[in-house]
Image (cartoon, rainbow, N blue to C red; front, side):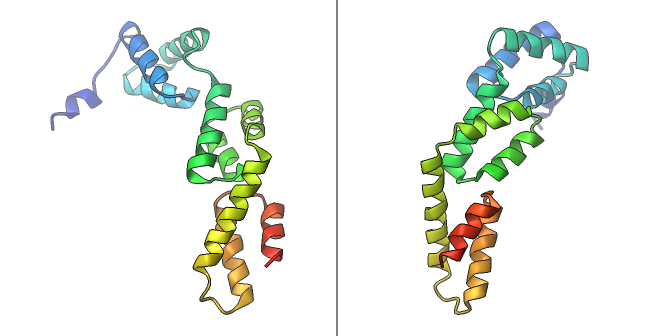
Length: 160
């Protein structure tokens, strides 16, 4: 395989730094993504930590900026709710403070409108379902899987 040699290529910290800068400049990244990339370059934990520190100092890497961008992007494009966004950011090792800031950056009116629109779209696919309770359960499950809060979902489902 021609790509095999790139997967196991080793870099010195001096070679890895510009590559890491490019990696971070291309798209917002979290610390864990950058660390994983650096380990893939064959760097050890101390070397990776030093490069991450440099990236933070030079503003290539900013966890708060990443969290806000991630939350907004996944809300707008994938229509994820705050619960799912929070979970995914936690899985990426983002701090609770940055997660809170990111969730507050989501506009409440847009959030509620998206929830209503998703409920309407799902209800349209459940037209043939005659049993009211099954219809409500399927709608509730759909909205919860999308990551919307229990109380908001319950409120929407109870309106049916």
